[in-house]
Length: 98
Image (cartoon, rainbow, N blue to C red; front, side):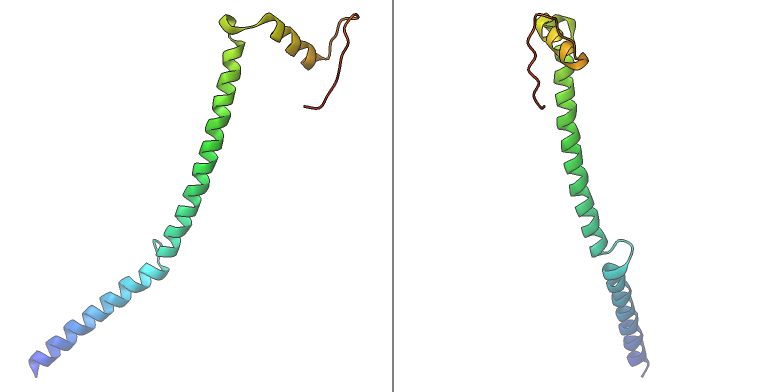
């Protein structure tokens, strides 16, 4: 009789632990669905990181062109005239969309 109660108690404890961990695996704070959401957010953050990395590389290349050792006077003149909207009286200006 006593052996049956011990087996029943152990079985109930095991079933309770199984139910506890099963519920938390499905609905808990660190559940499988939460982990899937974290994976999706991680993928979005990685895409944003790659976009920002490409933008940074483009800006670094632009800055490299502005350094004194690689500065082309004609390119500087052309860029400043385009940005400021200046032209000499003897120049022909052709405007086009960027």
